Image (cartoon, rainbow, N blue to C red; front, side, top):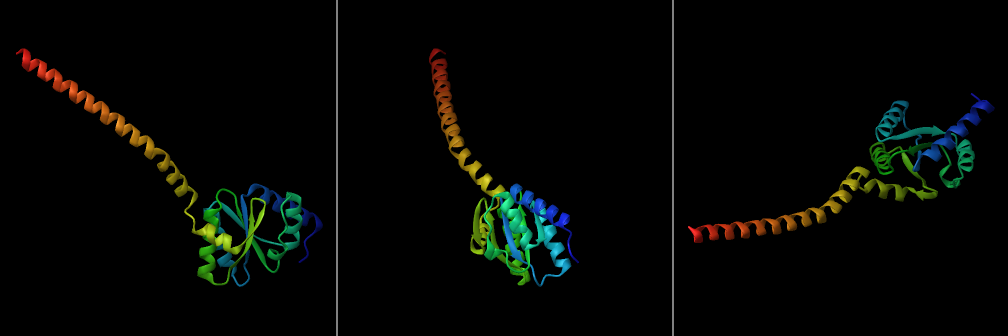
Length: 177
């Protein structure tokens, strides 16, 4: 079934907006996946704050040009579906990498991170990183540790001063009595 010119223009505009909104786009070869498997993968990607769309390569090339991004010709060969990473790059990379290992049919071709074309190895490396939330927690605890240590040192010094003053007051009381 042929797609009308207007529908193609809408798709190009939609793809261009998705590329502009996303931090990264991960391109996969989905051939061999059933409709049910594709829907399950879409749901997992949605849970990770991403979208997953089967696309037409020619229209994606036009959308990338419209969005001012590089056109990775080598990634836009054969059946292509794109995972658009809207909130986090790591979580969708993990979902796709794990799904590719499970299904043995889905393959990760590569993608676009920022304005740079990346290969499947980089995406696998991203998938091995801790999630954004874990990284933020680690950063926050790293910032809080020295502050907590300083508070403990200062409060320990104050406790020591209070103890010395109390002992001195007790000594004065016993000396006067």
